[in-house]
Length: 200
Image (cartoon, rainbow, N blue to C red; front, side, top):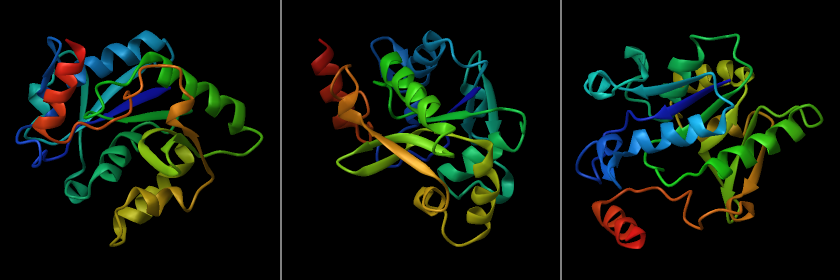
């Protein structure tokens, strides 16, 4: 099973690449790698990024988005990694701007996926907040690949375009017994400042 850290966004609202923002002495992507390794369920962790940032990641495999899809958002990153490995049973996807994610959150979702994948024929198992899916914290089966490919060839690159076409189920973020803001995106410098203050 493989994990994909989505780190190819422009981070325009944040002002600099979020992957390399610092929190408690480590970059965002390093925080997430440490959490993923601690779960002991992934045999490979891959950064999905763009050509401009690829060389700045250390000690981790980086896959650059396919040239034809590199401006098409998270789906392009997921597709570029998934198409390289048809043998993987599952891919865990997480956005790099979610550095507060915890081992408990990943493990809980993995258990949820395992419990439902056979009976419900699940293709995607992810988290949701107040009924709204968070497709950038989710497990994806390889069966999603052709659906993602068709979405990238269309004019709708939204992740909703994909999860509405496959079998998906969502676990409420508040069902995880871990820190309350673990799933929050850090989109602005003000968000990061708030998190830093909370951790003091």
